[in-house]
Amino acid sequence: MTSFDDRERGFEGKFKHDQELGFKISARRNKLLGLWAAREMKLPAAEHDAYAKSVVMADLEKPGDDDVVDKLLADFKAKGIEMTDHRIRHQLTEFREIARQQVMSETK
Image 1: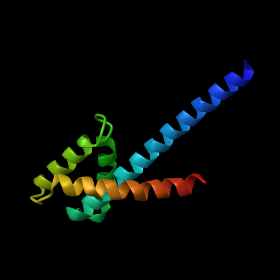
Image 2: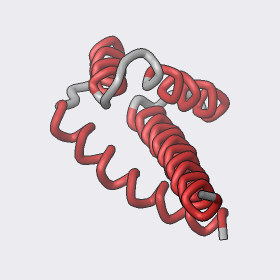
Image 3: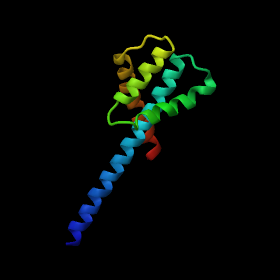
């Protein structure tokens, strides 16, 4: 029975690791997206990190990316800057790959 238990613990460990890695990648992606949006909105450089953190926190509101996209669309609109859902989602895709590469290089 111990080999079965060892195998089960191994699968549980891999699942936990994969979940943590996915969370880190999403958080990094959202930070990169927030920094991009801050530059697009021409926020003062001193506010970029705080804005990026607000984007990371927005992703914790509900599952999926809609909460982040909605936040950015509302913020762009408040600044009088035209932005589309499509462009934000495109940036999400690009930043996900960059974030994945960054996080993976840090974990090696």
